[in-house]
Image (tube, rainbow, N blue to C red):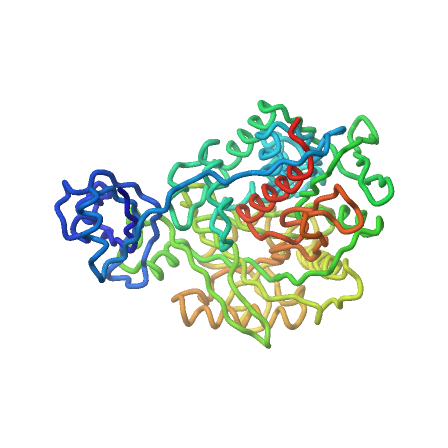
Length: 535
């Protein structure tokens, strides 16, 4: 028999090999009574810096007699382990007379295609960027020279924008597919620990190989992937999708399709415009924007871990902070411990920043976005692309203030809080490449956003020692936290008035992060499978 024991605390000084001993002590029985022990989840509890520990949830196997005795006791966090059964899929009956096309090979498109291929549907994937190995070279060139390839960059290409990030797999969604996504990542080369850690991450260095392995798996299962192939239009037959149009080096091509899963991510502003011109139902969606802030990694580690900072079992410290400013939320987003600030522009004339960490998280600085909520008060609601235009204006202002060449404007926090421009940098060296210009970052932000960032830094400094240090660096602009557009879809996952067209993932406005986008891609693929018969 099996029971789930939760809130089992293991001191930082104890090895995981002693977990059975701690479990037996919690159950008030000898270690020999535990026949099996499986770790389900591990979280770090650093609320008391003098008593940092790991909290485990484990499944323990006991005899029927011992299980009954434990369940009668009170004051112990334990329950029967549920019987595990695989999630059941449903398949439709409509004959599949043309391919299912998936547009985009970010998390949503990747997992939609994987789910379709795994079940025999042989999807055709169109990705405007390049395969990850070539893309890595293109991105490195951009960061070194400031010369942007608009088709292959930190946004477009195999793996999507998440490939050049921290590879965080934390999500707040309650969906059984989330653990499925994590397991699939592990099966394709991600560290096994992601299946049990409460805050798992892969790191951009490992994630590149993982997404490549997933693509190769799709190919082995009969799918097809065409890189440097850009969706430029679609064709209707009445109120149903009949074909998509794609542009590649070979020219413009009409591709008949039974269905199209649109998983382009929220960086593809030209796709949003094409869809709006085609009459698809879309809405402006609130999002957040602001700056990236960098501190010395050691400072953040000390603030979070105290005397245990630097302990090999802890790694680099994380944080998440939130407050209010002028009736708007201001919060930290996409925190990258031991990482760097990176250029993520996908079109000319706009500066976009993001954060990136490798698996080791051992860089000199730790960084995060400090962002302020943006909504209809700022861009109106009449036009579904109003939020997109607001975002583009932010990026152009940052480009202007940086002086061109994708140089980003940056300030020292002490100068920013004092309302003066920076003339240089101190103890914290900016990591953004192609480079930064010391200036007054507030000059490229709307007034409410500049004030919100200032208020947020001050509020967060009261909670996390050193957050408001004078030498910390802020770099503008962090503008792509989530989509500024939602592509409306019905309960079957289809766009109203266009049967067979399935918007999915972050770009469609239905996800926010690698796992939630992957889950939405899987769910969307299942909507398609519920309609069409398995080949």
